[in-house]
Length: 397
Image (cartoon, rainbow, N blue to C red):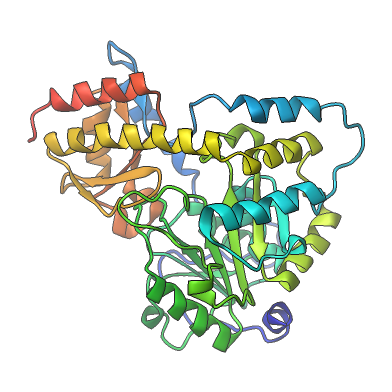
């Protein structure tokens, strides 16, 4: 089994790219936080304060937190299950697992997922942060993440004391064989969509080497100029989910960020191992949230309405950025616009903050993001309109 090979045959990477994981000093205990980078959002305090001084208030397009109301059908399901006094099932209710399987097939064309190969998680970030640890990785193991990536991929590797390499292609890895490879399509932050040929190549390469592939698919339902495919789609994996994990979230598609509602699915043996460890660790999604997830997965109407909201905001914001002198790269899917003015990303953050607009600097996501900013579509229509007015009133220089 892939997991056992990963544990028994530890592969020591000979080198890393970027900032190395800090090693524990001999003879003393080091705080866990010492192994982690500074929390990125804490560094935006000055820009946030500047943006808040705008006479019409801040337009916060930085974090990407949902702002639209939770659909009534989901709220009702949550309330109806609020009486449940007992401990939840770590594996998830049978109803939840069945709903996830059906939604994956109906919305994304994913087939062949057994209900036992679905595991609810306390939001996708929680799983990503602890996945290397849950899989038993350690200092001898290498985790490959995209060059521009959600910071929690790196954080999860650091928590396990594993090594990290940033690579967008297999050739960048050379002879090194990671224990875990992350894919993210559509990408956060860039909105780039990986093509089916690329996905197939990664899956085939990983299987030859016994490497686990974890595909972060939180934005799979938000394709604009391209149609994203899951790593579990039969066109990608041929119906064989061995060694593959797909990570899904309801935070954006159903505005359930506050519920902490996600799930992972794929290789049945890997899911069983994750379940076995999570039982001991108390990593359990509350029963009312599981009921809300069933409602969200069973109802496609609210998801379509939410998608239309993001499409409308994207259609307004993208041309306004271009009119203000920005170039938008990638951004063919997902919840963000990946934009540049050809200058250091922090300078762009400051330029926008002076106009009451807060965004995330591209450097948050890797060295290659040093001249981009990530602009989220998660603001109310009124705030998006305010941003558009401020951008179109600004000179392009």
